[in-house]
Length: 164
Image (cartoon, rainbow, N blue to C red; front, side):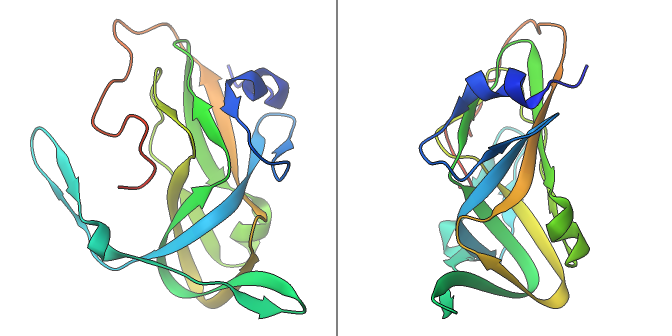
């Protein structure tokens, strides 16, 4: 069962007013953008992410507002919002339609029951030559589905971590 935005809201860690509660999700606002230049090393028992493979994108002033100017590429997004996934739900982040229509897409992994972080993050793929995103604009939508309570909750290496 897909949860409503109002059912999700109590599980969020909100420090700004940039988010928006929707019918079946919550719009997330972008706090930081980093270009991803390198990959990760995936071992059988852990994943190693090198922070040197990430470069923060600085904002550019356009009409007095701060914008991220993003050419085609892969980016790590850090949102203003955090979450604590309850034991009976699983979370996901997807693109808002405005991002999708602009030639970009957001894909997130599964956010397991028990996962917690002060600020969420995920990956965005820009497929067009350029996209402009105002800082704190709502670009992703977080949604949750209800699930049976698992035998154990998430307690992996990325507990409390955003991107690396």
